[in-house]
Image 1 (cartoon, helix red, strand yellow):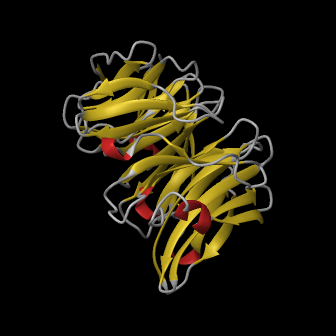
Image 2 (cartoon, one colour):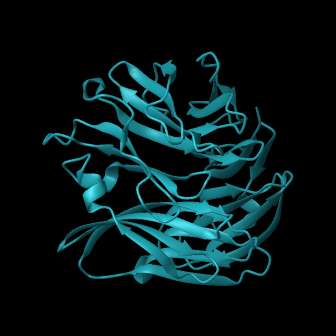
Length: 349
């Protein structure tokens, strides 16, 4: 742990939980805080070094899927915008100016929605995968959005692509969307190839910059393993890392971009703390949550090290782990120095 930042001072007089964060190349980060009072706006907090450097507010995003930093320095908050529909807010962290792009307008016939996003900073495009259940059925699509204008510049209906691997739509089995080095994205979900929905296979679908399939579906395991994806993360070279549960515990696997199923990197006994995963830029260490903080796994040997504490001595909840140029970010809460204290931790190898 390089630094632990108590976020309480970012929302004076108001209790707010940290719901997401994103790292920036200079070693800092942005954190998104959501007040418990839903009538209040959310706060975007700028973190530099080991201190809070500024705070701006933005209209609430009811369900935050992802956060990204765009080429112009704006912070993109992607998810369910509530009464407006599904889309993103682009926030200037210095001035607080907010630009909203609604990609799917709210409708009375929408029963549920989920999604993931990936930013291609070089092209200025944000890719989103949406799975929406309506009275008329399920709509699943991959979108390309021009960040500067908020316009949808490409769209692919995923119904046939998903049906080629699964008897059911992705829905809640959508695990992640990761950028590919030459443009495009890799979509990760748990396919159910039989009529038994619980019989799943972690599956990758790759798309190029034009949203066209780049090869066939890649099955990461076989049906006999009974695997289910817990968490995914990606590397700059397009490698996809997955932590999947199996009967005996969890497997940590790597799948190279453009290749088939990759190697089994580690076998872990734990099935509880696999809900988040980060791999350092050098692809030597993986980091997972642990009861007292985080746990590192040596990807060269498969050895899981003893957990590393985060300086919390009363009820720690690591809510998420997120990639950073020099390691990882962790967000969550601790009951010290006071109950439900919201923290962001900087982690390094």
